Structure formats: structure tokens, C-alpha cells
Image 1 (cartoon, rainbow, N blue to C red):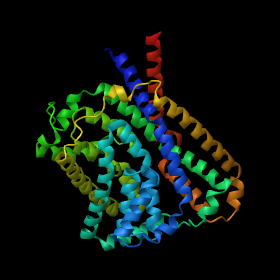
Image 2 (image 1 turned 30 degrees about the horizontal axis):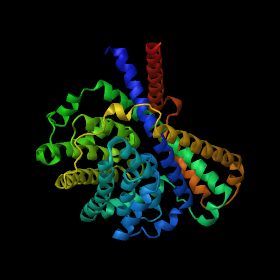
Image 3 (image 1 turned 180 degrees about the vertical axis):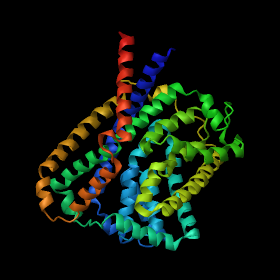
Image 4 (image 1 turned 60 degrees about the horizontal axis):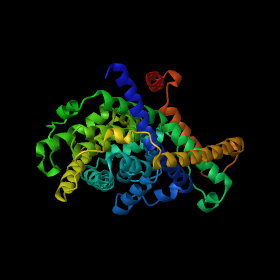
Length: 424
């Protein structure tokens, strides 16, 4: 296969990844948007002021029902922290809002299989509990007081009070759902585009022996229980750094995790990779902006230790019941285009997305009126989202991320042209 054929194959693989995940994205973000619009956050915060089990559980549940955009998760966590949520509950929310959200679970099931989905859910809960224990043991009271002061200085307090029963039965409420759905996509489409493209090209261009060397794999099939402990430990320790070096967001990480799994990376390594999106430099920098560098590095350290311990526990727990998945599904299978259930689910997803975008257009028409009103909660939704968008896309059209996105679009278009030329 010559380089042009490989190039075209990389593009087709990337587009195939996205095609097979499209309906999951639309459904997941639609559900997430509805929950975020109809669940008043401030009432939940009233029960998150202590670092006890109830507070942590509520933070985890709330996080799992919220946005899966890593940047939005950090912004929402800061808002909760400002409103009085305990620091332990805030960190629990961060974990849950990026590792236990609906759309991520569906994507893991589609790309990696049911064992990984079960591990993701169980491991997410374990990771939250471990982080809570670690923070309680090492609790830096002065640092956290400074972090709260820093958060209040960098962002004003929000209000989020409304009658959810009235909102869920109103046209305006569902227009807000459409608005939130579009905003969710505005926040994540770059990461998704880059992530799926990177995964497609890595699947084609990077040979398995590269991953086998990096993760000490021998290339021989071994059950999870047969793997040497040092290899499992090394995989768990290094996976977060690989995630940091290839940061493409929690959604974009799943196709790449599939490539790593097919390349022989252990179960512990794959789980460590999936859990590590909040440890990557851009997100640590966001936390530094919110809480200061000392607190941001403290959070990253807690996350790293929790991820490694959780990955090891999952590996050996699944090995004990002989359920460690040895490899993922075939890459060609999960990147293929076909007239099957995915095709019809994607058609339904296009209809759902169209309805939500139409609702968004209705919300746009009433924006001027809303700006002049004093409906509790609206100011929070609008200001929070646009503040986040400004921070996330700082730099305008020539920001590094937008330049990268432009390059990715050109690469995809070029690959399609080569593919069409080959078929012709």
C-alpha cells in the first residue's frame, strides 16, 4: 500500500469512526442538555457543602448527568465550588462529569465492548471514593481557602433558581434545551473532529509494535491474570502521560483507546488512558486560572494517584472473575460503513438534531426579550456558557486550535478526493 492509499485509508477510517458514533453523540448530548436545563443546580449545592458520603454521592450523580465536555465540566465545578460545594464534592463532580456521562458510556460500549463499559462505571465510582480518601488524608485547608478566594475573584457568583415544573412544560424551557444542545456541540466539535481524525490516522500509520514497545507488550496473547505485575503497573503509570501527550478530549479519546487496545495495551493501561483527560496540560491550566497553580497541581496529583490505583484494582478484579477483555473489536469492523442498525439510528439522530436546532432558532428570536427579563436562572445559563466559550476559544480565528482544525479539515477533504480518484 503506497502512501496515498494509506492517507486515504486513514481519512476513511476516521470518518467511519465518527459515523458509527454519531447517533450516540446526538442522543447523549440531547439527554445531557435536557438534564442541565431542567435540574436547578443551586438546590443540589445545598446538600454538597460537606465532604461526607451523601455529598460525594450527590456530586457524582450530578456530574454524571451533566456535560461531558472537559472544559465545561471544570467551569461547572468552579461554579459549584463558589456556591459552597465542599472541595471533595467538587473534585468528585469533576471526575463524574467527564468519566460517567451518558454519551461517553454509549461510545465505550460501541467501540470497546461491555466489559469496558462496566469497568468505566465501577471504576469511576472507585476513583471518586479513592480521591475523597486521599483529599481527606492530605486536606490542605489553607490552600483550599486560597482556591475559593481565587475562584471568587476570577468569576462573579451565579444564580440558578427556577421552577423546574414550569420550565419543563413551557415552550421556552424546550427552547433552552435546543440552545444548550447547540452550545454543547459548539464546545466539543473541535475535540471530536481532531480526536477522531488522529485516531483514524494512528490506526493506519502507527504499527502495533510501537504500542507494544511503549507498554511492554510481547505481542503474545496472554490472559489478564497471566500478565506480569510490573507490566500491568507500568501500563497504569504511563497511560495518563500518553493521554496527556495525545490530548483530544474525553470523547475523542475512545477511538484512540480502541487503537491502543488492538495494539496490545493491557486492560489497566486502557482504563488509565480513558480516565486521564482531566490531567492533561490544557485542563490543568484551566484549573490554575480558576483556583491558582498550587491547587491545580494538587488536583492533578490526586487524580493521577486515583487513576493508577483504580486501573490496577479494575485489572485484577476483572482478572479474578476471568472477564479481562484481551483486545478490542476489529478496527475495520467499527469504522465500516454499512446499511445496518447504525444507519437507521443515525437517520433518527439527524431528525432529533434538526428539531433541537429548530428549537434553538426559536430561542434566538426571544434572546432580546430574555436579556431584558429577570427570570431567575437565565442569566446563569447564558453568562456561564458564553464565558466558557470565550475562555475555551481565546485567540479568535487564528488561535492554535482553530488553525489545527483548519488543517484537519483540509486533510480530510484531501483524503476523500484521493479516495474518490482511486475509485474512479
